[in-house]
Image (cartoon, rainbow, N blue to C red; front, side, top):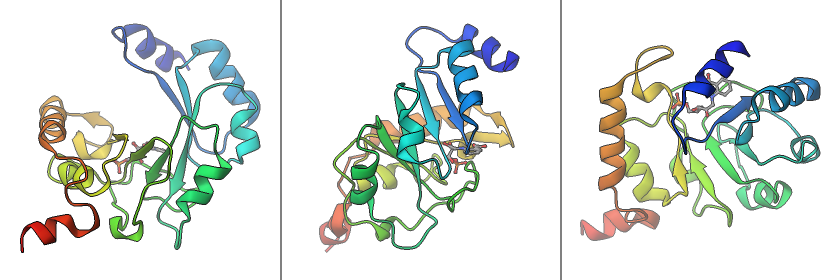
Length: 181
Ligand SMILES: O=C(O)c1ccccc1NCC(=O)[C@H](O)[C@H](O)COP(=O)(O)O
């Protein structure tokens, strides 16, 4: 908590602070809210919608795309009061930050709520992800690190440059293949 508080205090204005949890006890979430007042909560495990909303605080729900046959519309319905869904490559209840991608072709369409694509993104593939999904946002962790847990400024710049150059949705539904003839 002390490290999180220090980082939080050093952030410049307008940088959103997200507190990420993997199947926490409610008391631990409340302690973080009381101590840090993050901009949003992110629940990464098998937390129920009732659990996520009991704090009356903005939250995102991660969807474990490492599972078979995920029905994103049902997830959006179930977590309808979430700020958004975050699609990640983990299996249910497992940690993220794995650097693995999920099968992008397993979903024809994103649900009708802000959707963040994560899982194995890096400067070399983030444009393709944006062009495939046209997501609300992308999330990256290990793909911009020089060593586990150490973010690399140049890789972050390269990632952002690839994001800037991407054409959202231009590869959706095989549009890339059609364009290539
Ligand atoms: O990043 C972690 O260490 C982590 C641990 C436990 C639960 C979730 C975790 N990360 C969630 C994230 O939002 C990551 O940014 C996401 O999994 C993408 O990671 P990566 O595939 O390394 O880009």
